[in-house]
Length: 131
Image (cartoon, rainbow, N blue to C red; front, side):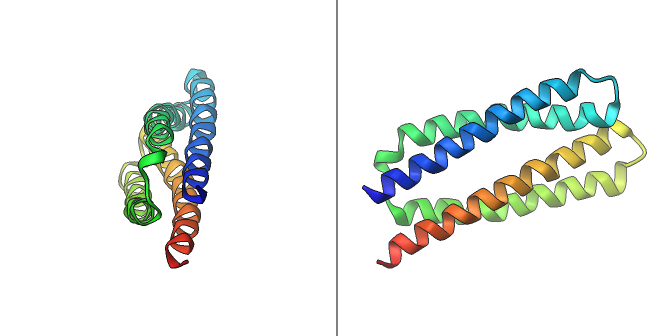
């Protein structure tokens, strides 16, 4: 029962972030400043993808064990680091293009949030597996 509640909390946290990303991303994308448009595009894309993943996860939460959730989140933590590295690479090598610079910043923002979220819930699920 604790695992189900925690899995749903994770899912609803990701849904809240997703909708926030979509709204803020749409606003930024409409501003005629290329850096902000790049950040906005990434917020929109990540928000759409994350909401699909989160809704699917909430409905499948009953099938999750703490061990499976922890394993899945551990993989995600590493992927979140990769996302941020990709964002840094975009900034370092393509900073001359303001739109691509914004995309790099947007990827870092999304990856950083997901890193914190995934790491927090990973630790919570690991605690459940230890008991």
